[in-house]
Length: 478
Image (cartoon, rainbow, N blue to C red; front, side, top):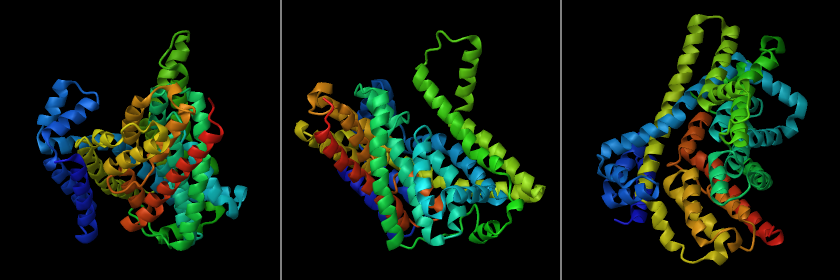
């Protein structure tokens, strides 16, 4: 069966199970993964593995693997990437909210920027943080602040939520050293400094478009704050009414957020500067680099932050039973998010194994004259079909590189790299693990997640395409 038909059937099945049958998302996604895998021919899996760079022996082994094993491995690989981060992020979030730390940060933020500028502060803050730090980590750290601020004005909950998303996702896909733009820049031979500068410029443009959409969507749709497994609305209100002297200090409240960002940022930029070359460094400097390599790993950095957040919570409670109960509740909340996210990852990988990425290359033809919109829409289709923005960017760059090198276009190839990043934002939905993380941690329904997340990213993606095409014509840089 043609991969395009398989992908369409898989997508339709997920939508039918969740919307019409109202099945639990985990069950629906796993069911769709099983059906998709059953319909995928062995030759498609083999070709997918070869295109991914596996040896013929490993490709044959994957194609011959039992259906259940392939789904379990896909589920497990997703868990390996995000499960520890989600669990630790949940602990940090609960500890910050219940200890009053998030409330203390919000009061200080309001004193500095004022109520009118809070949404812009969230937008610029998430954009800046997501340059060196993965977006999901930024979201875990900022969602407690969004909730604590929104309890004062619930009508602006969706605005604060969307501006955090808007700033973070565009930095993640346009500015190195995050994997997608870093890989694209290296594959196209683009200077990383230039990629960062141009990525920031278009990141500002697209994030501002997202900000405008957030203002419109906040006015059009009322997104209510709901109880989530980590904390209830009533508990947030009680914390918001506390006196200043009953809240923890600002520096200790900020530490679980600032420290992991500094550690992860330090490791990212050090790797980019050293490029694995330790020659010329003193033994002490080598040890320092090795230490930062350990503590700068996102899992370890968030573990350290979680320990600090737990101390912050203990310092306010000083009750073993309450402390253990709240940590347990945070982990139970994370458990369901992990299950849904990993099921979405398994479904996405089953879609990838249909070899949908290579199948779409049949439609490209020789379209060098329209390479910018071609690369954009090709990335968008691959992203929507299989769920991973990074996979979509990597697949597309492999295709468009066949059209020629740096001198093959009437503009600098950095524009092509940016438009691929923008295309990877188009309509994330239920086969994207990020969709479920944002949906469940913010208390949104599936419909609300599409309105406040999927549409938001789509608007920013198209804003990126338009701005790239205009500026590539006005300032081709060649």
